[in-house]
Length: 400
Image (cartoon, rainbow, N blue to C red; front, side):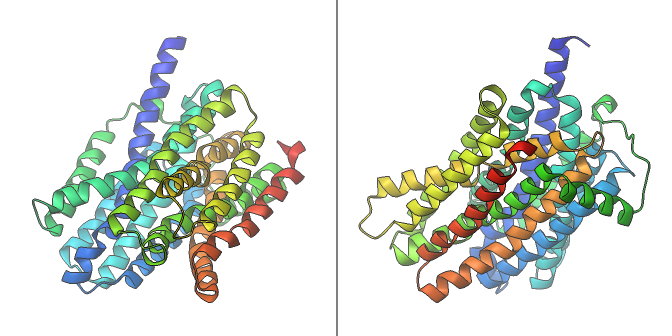
């Protein structure tokens, strides 16, 4: 196959995986966008939204661990399509009988679909991407996470201007179904060959777990991602409350400031991947990003009612680029360090550690903030997990 054809194929495969990642992220974030309407129509509160998030990510964590075994049954592209179908089923169940129990059930189905998406895309991209572009391609694909958030934040309010929330969700559901139908015609040669003998879940999981924690680089990447995810979700969970309740910003302005971090994370994910491919080693980039997260956390902690709005915006842009922009470089290195044909299962295990940080981090930061009387102290508390991540990376330099 010629170089031009290989490059074209790599970009087409990237488009497929980016679309899947964006749709999965959008489906996951629809309820948080709808919560003002749902609280009125169904008496579902923001505390119930916390249950939805926990349910979704716990299921995602479980399914990411199961991905290795599932990939021995079906290929990563077919499994990715099933993931979007699972998100669609969850939305359909909630639409048929809107209530708190079906909201949590929707969370479980969406989480079940969301969990395997990244491990699947890692296996797809590692097979179809030229090695010298791995960091860039993986980083672009990971922009699907914030892009999905942007889609949810823009599409749902726009649809609510012309229809009720049932119809708005139905439009999104139909879009997911249409994508599944189109994706079924994906060229067969994009699907990596299954060279792994089908094994039981227990065997596949234990083997992947042993590989991760016996390989210094993979162990460091998994544990560091646990710390990084706490940093990422702290911003996503508490930024609006911090800006609105403590600093007195209107909700619209607070949302706009948070959106700056989302946009900068998209740019950051691509830029850090490009730098890691061209100029710096992935280890150097991860150390740099960790130092950037520490700086950003201190910057947000330093905000007070007298701080200029311009500086606050710059702090959030820095936080987004660093604290939400690390994923692409991390996932590329996980795939690169994985044994041949095992990138899906290894990524699944490392992501289960990442999701554990998502589940544990925000409640812990919330407790710290409430006990100290300000969410600023929650951002200061991030120096502990980020300091641990930095020590882990510095201590395993030779492993990379």
